[in-house]
Image 1: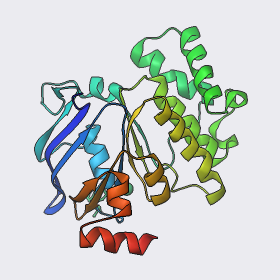
Image 2: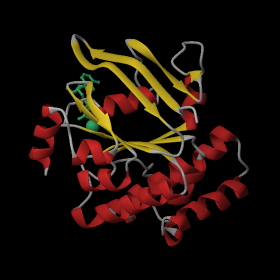
Image 3: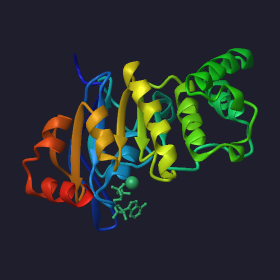
Image 4: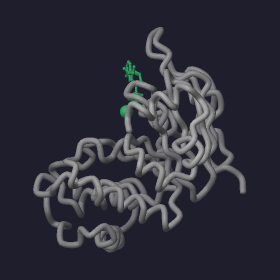
Length: 243
Ligand code: ADP
Ligand code: MG
C-alpha cells in the first residue's frame, strides 16, 4: 500500500541554526512511527512541519499523495486532516470537556450540535471520561486532560495523528493511562507519528522508529532493529544514556 505521509528532504532553520536537515520520512497507513532522540534533536519541529505549523526551508510533504506544502494548498484544510496533541496545555480552560471536543467539529466541520455531542460523548467514554463531559479541564488530572485532548483531536476524524511527548508533563503514575489510550488507537488502526522519550513504550507500540540527532534521521528501522540492535554508534550512545 502506498504511504499515507511522505516527507522529502525537509529542511528547517531558525536563523542560521539548522534544526532539520534533509529529513525523509515515510509513514504507511495504520502504522505507528516513533521519533526518538535527545532534547533539541528536532522531534517537535518535525511534527510541527508535518502539521504545517512551520514553513519548510526546503523539501516537501505529501499526505495521501498530495503535496501539502504547495503554497496553493489551504493549510487549514490540511490541519483538519492531521490532529496534533502536545505535551501539555491542550484543552481550552474556559470550556467544558464536552465543549472542548465539540468546538472543532461544530465550528470547522459544521457538524450539528447534537451530532457533535453524541460523537464527543462516545469518544470520551472510549477513554474512560464519560463522567467528565461537563467538567472544566482544571478539575481533571493531567492524565485525564491528555486523554481528553486525544479525544478532542479524534473528534475531527483526522487521517493522521501526531503526538508530541504527550506523557512528559505527567506524574509517573499517570503516564500508563495515556499510553494505554495510544495503544487502543493503534489497535483501531489509527496512523500515528509520535515523539517520545518512553523507550519501552516506543518498543511496544512502534512499527517504525526514527532516531534523530542534530536534525537528521541518523537511524531508522523497526523498533526491534533500532532499539534492540542499533547499528549507528550515535544511536547506541543515546540508548545507553536513556536506559
Ligand atoms: P526536540 O523536540 O527534539 O526537543 P525541537 O524540535 O523542539 O527538539 O528543537 C530543535 C532545535 O530547534 C532546538 O535547538 C531548539 O532550540 C530549536 N528551536 C525550536 N523551535 C524554535 C524557534 N521557534 N525558534 C528558534 N529555535 C527553535
Ligand atoms: Mg520536543
